[in-house]
Image (cartoon, rainbow, N blue to C red; front, side):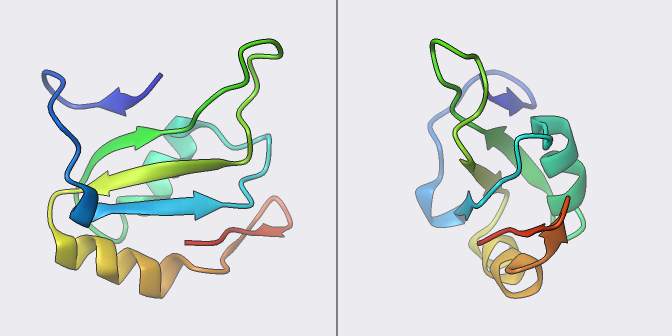
Length: 88
């Protein structure tokens, strides 16, 4: 389930970043709060396992602009969260 503002729209892939090595303790809300420091976040999507209902260790963060996404990749890559460096 993705967290977003407003009605569902098509994702701007150029303004969307992949995040990997996400700790199981991280929620979509925590990721939203972290990444909004880089720029306005449009949506956060962390796919969950259908059986366990836990996320699979990766996700996507969509920003308003490509520049915000580029900035997030520069400043957020390898930041440690719960002892694990996230990959952006």
